[in-house]
Length: 277
View 1: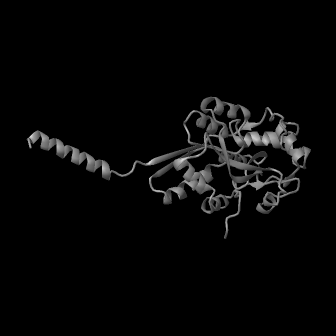
View 2: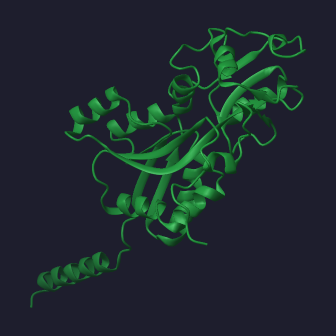
View 3: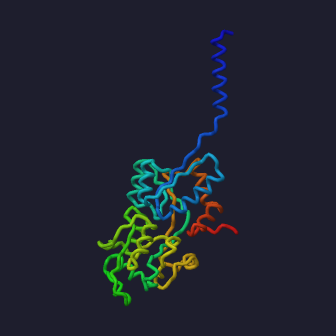
């Protein structure tokens, strides 16, 4: 055999060997959306990757609307949302992909109304909440003997929490023009701690340093949410463009498994079903 032929055979053998024994290329899942769900998404990602070598999960907040837009623009594999798809969003998915999108219920959340611990208020009615956040009630003196203006804090419009609160508490009316827009739940918490006369809202499992106001006399507790008594509750969703396949399906199946639903509870949300003890 001529030397050039021998060298060519050796090259093919080495190339075959390298291809055979290279580690499998890591697979990636990109999740973007609801800021409310970020703590839960991070816990899911951490636990899932511990037992699924070769799969990397990247999570990012930005709000429900931002996540859905990322899904439409192929910048996310999964959108995390704290509300159902809006009709215009569903239309965009249909136009872009010829699909209606797939909605997966993955948990349940309850919203709390946050107050500073020094605020004397401990309960508000749904009607009082509506009047406070629309700007009809502007001073605490209209409710109690505390002559302080009410500083209203709200989430930005790309937040599913913003829209849910507007639809279910404000009954579709506009927020007060004087309301201050705060980007995240953590920032709402820190702002209220600095300003005792302010009021805001966010997930029931967040803002442990604040007072979580009773609504219609009903405390925001696990028992009251599970019993269907607490009035401000909502479902949490994961959205995909088409029926999940491959690693995305593997992750979502795991989220709905006993392990994934156990983490929902550990993260202070409510599982859609109770895993066996």
